[in-house]
Length: 207
Image 1 (cartoon, rainbow, N blue to C red):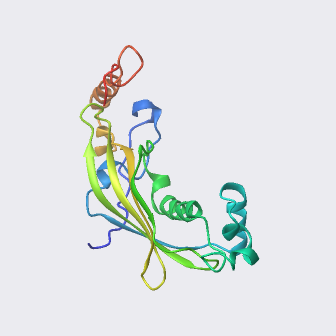
Image 2: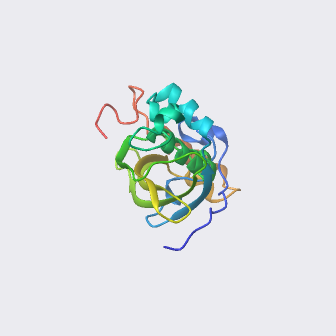
């Protein structure tokens, strides 16, 4: 698949016209069609960073003690798998996720740690969009499935995760920076109609 660059941000309506008070963003659900790829750059974890993370969240000796780690099955200090996942998330956020209308994640479909991460090891990240699904009951949002990957500098896979992320759709009135007032009012009515009297956006019905 050819590498694609982030598209320029579309003009957005005033904040009071956005559904649920969300802020204008550079990326919406429509910006993640299947096949789109993002190259994330690289990241390195130092020995101290590996020890510090594991000491707080995964205190096993092959993550926290370089001397004892030599006698483990890894024959040396290695990063916690959750630290590796966090490094990948850091790259994704810097590349695009922090600039999206992200509404959270219901989970992952799969996650794999394919080789241990050692101190000073350079990790190169990429993302490929696998699926894009528009919600039938909440028309202001939808779900994507993205494959997050880390590889070493030889191109060998290190980490792989099929991540599900919910994104908001681009506001319809963002198509023109000079949208007429009547069109903006119509957009507001559409957004308000998403909410039911019970305060939910589904009226108590399942997604």
